[in-house]
Length: 486
Image 1 (cartoon, one colour):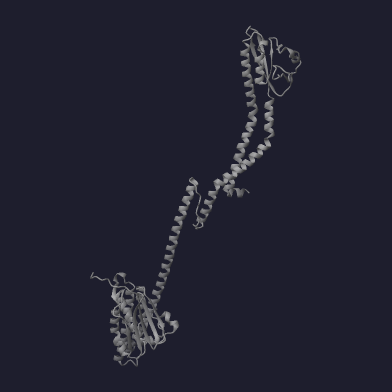
Image 2 (image 1 turned 45 degrees about the vertical axis):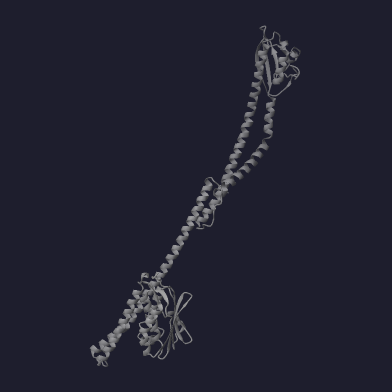
């Protein structure tokens, strides 16, 4: 129970409020019950004393006590107290008809008056107070007015307070319980809501909002907590976005680094083979090994190996260059004309293999490209198609515009690529048929360079098998040239 109370602010406030209200109400009742008899007695005595002093002043205007009947009757009616008049010897001289009876009254008895008479029969009463007031008549006679005040009413009031004590305690308990509950609910309800919202914020959940429509400090705290929640939510979302972007960049960088490692590993392997061949030729000729006597033949073979190495190094340098190309070098060109120029450069190669080029290119077709890079990509595609197509086959070349997009297709017939090899054709030094590729004189970087250039231009591209052969296709967005004549 103690642990539960310590963990609940509402329970603490309820208990404290209940105790404070109970103590305040109980203390008020206690002081009233203690002070009421004394205060009431003092009030009655003060009233009686004032009336007695006034009576003494009135009697000073008379020569005989019997002449003061009216004043004595008024005094009795106002004070409701027992009184009598004594002479200097202590004898009661008024009223005369009860003097004998008074002499037999004990000390705990009091004298009372009828409402219509100045004196009535004596009877037992509660607590009393007796006061003496000197009286001097007009003729100089001195007497003493004895006033006996009955405090029975005070005793009755005290008994009433004591009799209603259980009901007062019950009322104080119920009232304290109700007030403590209402006060606790009013004070702690927004605090509990704020505590719940802050707990959600601590768990990085910023969906909750404080709806307390108050203008006091709790309302200000709720508004500040809402603002803090919104700010933290925005900051966390930005941080998550930045973290995701950083994670993506890191993964991309790792992938690029892996590609670089694989690329240079493959490049080293590709350079190692011709170097080994070249070293074998030179060692055989220098050491006079049998079979290497015809130096001219082996020198020509060595020169061919050196040419191949030179082409490979040029391709490697070009790959390095493409990765550094900037967007500022891009411009709008007639893509159809660029394609026709590259077709002219490879026409001799196709004629050597007696291949037939079927070309379907429109007069003009504009797009924004880096011209030098795109020319190299087109050349590599065309050369690759010619090299890997058998003699006397056809190569179909088509350019078209479809919904603002340039689509190019180069299909070489008479060949087929295994389906499992298609996704790897754009990898550096990948060869679906290693022996055939080496016989063609390729470096293994042609399609890799095409891939890099297409990615630079954010183009879509792929190689697929068709019913007649293999087709490379790509798509680039059209862009009309700016008319400077206006």
